[in-house]
Image (cartoon, rainbow, N blue to C red; front, side):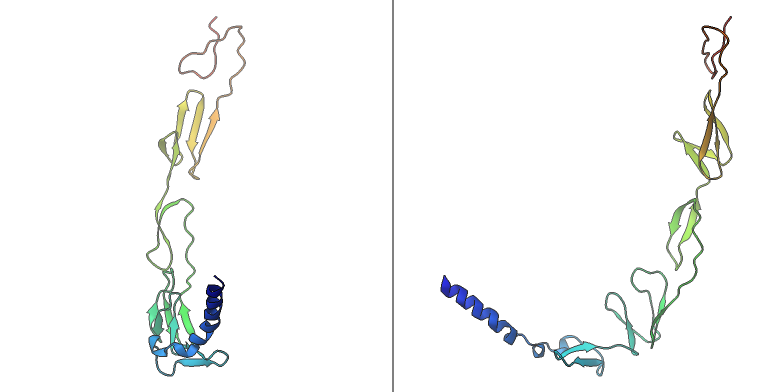
Length: 174
């Protein structure tokens, strides 16, 4: 068992000498000739596209003057010597009642605006008034919210008031 541990330690000591920066062939990572700078500390070679192209988030290289869409943006960029120059338009605000937004262009667009209210699984037009029960009066507000008021009944003057169908407040029979 001690022999196996000794062999493993010897192997681990040899690994740094087996793998060196010279073991990596630059031809495995193609780039334009002359687009290389050396890091003197480790002698590693890196591609340098400054002034010659642009690199997006996924590592794809674009030529000067080429138009591209970086990352998940729908706004285009143009590759320049100073780097990518991207359209950053001031997009109009999306309507707060917007129910369907499309992202086809650089700015999102509202394709459908909610212009109704929903109350107890029914739809009502803006400013429409309705009575969900004999004691409630409601209205669909421009904010797409339903506001209701409940009838305020006077105290009956009799001892045994009666509730009639389709009436909100109790009535005296005698």
